[in-house]
Image (tube, rainbow, N blue to C red; front, side, top):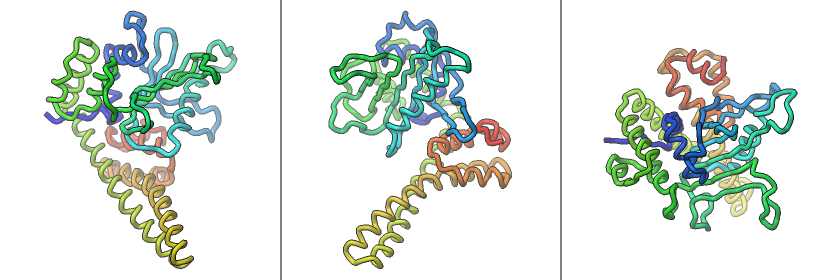
Length: 319
């Protein structure tokens, strides 16, 4: 049986929709005894905008513990130049989002970010699980209100409770799932959930659309990057034979990749939507002019799962 990859956002969201799975994952990742986690609620992933032009924050999987602590679980499969700044931006947004007008600072919740990265973020480290808090230069905690966990799925396992979760997220076949031998009830349920997801036709169709859009984006990125390098090379030659070529190639590479990332996603979204109906001119323009990669990523998944154009607009707030 071909498995749906849990590295796809929609699959991870489906997995964490099961309470036993999310409670056990948080227990193993955060080191909280299972009996201390009475409940874990799923929350709205859209952060509030405080003013009209503020960037819309869209989290992947947002959970709330029974002590009101908020947790964002993010799957990241592509490197981003400013990923650390972006991660802090969303952590700060989740923190301030909990304070309503007229409330006191004591209402601000503890916020935890858990990022699952499908690449080496720290190439010089062997440990796959890094934890960050606010501390002074001597390592003394200021507060535990902010906590960041970075888990690299590409590194060697270390014999911790997180090992089986890494095996689960990396599994590509039923045979690999069956090799995960554990008495952990949360992992066992997660394995069963993944097998069930992989047999359900709507989710398999959604996964196929996701993979098609991903492959198309790779192909478009490569084409636009090569075109950008070619343009940069010719412009560089005009500036100077040696120095000009170096400048032109670098400019072409950076401009080509930057354009390719956003245009590739926009094209993939429109391709999927055009199969569901006629895309209105205002929506088409909005998609093509959107430059935020995180927003485009959310729109791509929404396009794949939407029943029609109107449903897509409702999911993305592009009415």
